[in-house]
Length: 299
Image (cartoon, rainbow, N blue to C red; front, side):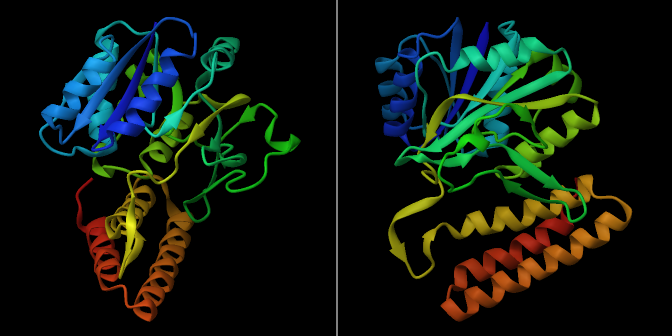
């Protein structure tokens, strides 16, 4: 059995679309666990009314992606699930999308987890994620194929450095060994940290692009109306900088750590200058707060 963990935060319509697509996907047996961050009684009731099969776990506050996902993961493990899937609530999945992912996991005992190819929902010919690359020399990451037109080179199965938490299917036994997501991250880079921890145990992370899913990118991090600080929430910049520092502190050692801190300092300076030129005071403040919290937080 697969336990599919979906985190909702004030986004009923996208979550509804995601759950509807799951129940239309004609997949193997699964249970859906919805963690409703900063839950409102009306929206939680609407979700349960529309999808009586789901388990919904309301939370009084916004626990972020990591802690909310961990609640769902633990619930799924207690159900006796053989596999756990993390799936963003702003995704839509096609029929039978789980079958190739399960096939990959069952093909090799060393494969711990797998992700599909993920396309932009509003531009389904363009890739949102074809997997992740980790540059250990500077403890930085990139997403394969991001914003590129889909071509043959993104259609080959392979092993990856890290998997995106947007959609990851992992063996339950691996979670028992590697542990849960690191709650310090709240959101962003937690999937990279989890992936690196899994790989350090000697396991493989796989990419199976045969049945893509579709992502409404940025649904929880962008505002509908442009402010003086743009569309992207200033809090995202706080998380981006702070969590990148967390990643360096946890995974970069020796010469690589020196390189990574220098690279990050240059990144902060470039962002800071851009925000000053654009007059984005809130983002500049969040950038500096993220820098301080990244180094002062005890991990």
